[in-house]
Image (cartoon, rainbow, N blue to C red; front, top):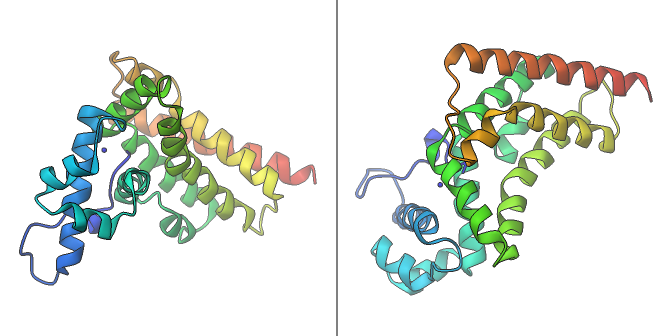
Length: 220
């Protein structure tokens, strides 16, 4: 799948030197599960099916992932890592303007990823019959990104924010980045932004977010 997975965490090829066998197995499972969740949805994807698709035993699947919820969450986290939107990467960011631009660039790229778009569509289609899958997707994907950026913003000393202000700024930031193209993408309408349009969206979002952050900081 979405959002999935930092260049350094991409699935390794079988037999690649220096890659622990357990990590290879884990990546095999994640790759297979990602494809199956997209093809069949969460409800109709079983751990047996994942084991067969990944070429490992069901016992091996369970040795890496306690249950299907954990596996689904790991697939989403895997995609976030690909675009360096996991918690660890976000905390290593530099000065605020540069950090926001870096995250914005990764988010826009993530939301142009065909597998991420497909996962959004699958989750929306499945959510009515199985609300649990929507909660898993939201908590592991969008919500985690908000938490990570909130934590980063709350630590900034040049523009001190309360935790609530930092969270509001993070939510505004991600919503501004979605713009119109994200809705068009999940509705299967033409949506892709060219590089000039991406740059404009990113720069505009960073500028607006910085203005909101400074305004919030002044109101304390």
